[in-house]
Image 1 (spheres, rainbow, N blue to C red):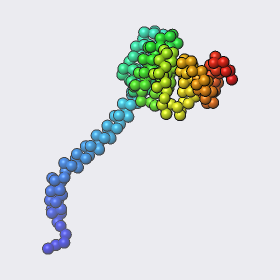
Image 2: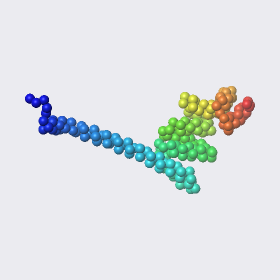
Image 3: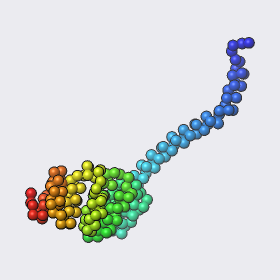
Image 4: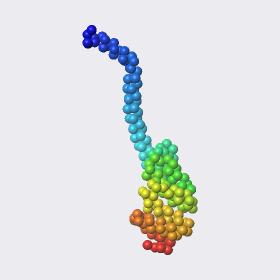
Length: 207
């Protein structure tokens, strides 16, 4: 009996192996191709989404027609809700509404950002702005609950203490307000620092 197999025997063994395992090999190759093209499709889709949302944001900011600008903003929030541009346009709208005294609608826009954005930084900024709007609406308990958050307290301690001071001041808890404002001053600079000092002056304890 020879120790070596003939070419025909090797071919027959290969055919038998392929008959038994070929479908798994093909499935593996197809899966690998699907993953490769799927990843490329996802990357291109993400790039297109960012590009389109950026263009809409630019149009919303630069349109001379308020109705058209509002339409662009609405499209951003409805079709590109997860993008940073949707969150930013909502915060822009909230700022404009708050400056015009429409705190209820401003709060709605900011809450939309909190509920929809996937960017932790934008979420934190929206929460801080929403807390200020809630203070303006005299919804003090809701504002306090919003800023009672370890992440906010650590990364935005100055702003959190400033808002906490506003809450205490609105409740006529002057000593607590003074302490919060003084803590806010420790990490605040420039215009923010000046505004906090004015608030301390209003409490009769100018720094």
